[in-house]
Length: 133
Image (cartoon, rainbow, N blue to C red; front, side, top):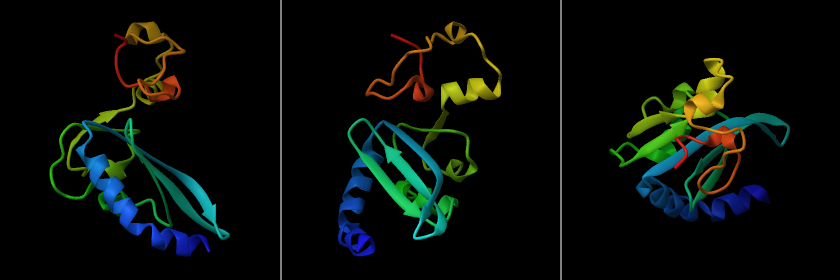
């Protein structure tokens, strides 16, 4: 049944993807997921107003391309440095907290962040990508 519902909403995904592409700031991430006993991935593409969640068996760049397309896009795509986004048709920005984790930053104030800073549109500081106003 879930597969029939997904098929019925295919045109909605196309409309949401078009809206997502127009945003000046986009986020994307993926994580492992099991569906019907099969390993796969849950992909999230979101903006301040749009969230698209896809379930695919692959973690390849073809999924990012499915949503981002190939035409140049305005703005930035904020990601976690996973290589599937390297050919995104827009500028990339890396998630500040993840970058700091890889660089072993223990003093967030040196980056202009506080531990409890929040996304401009909700969520936790692990997705915060800029200096505080």
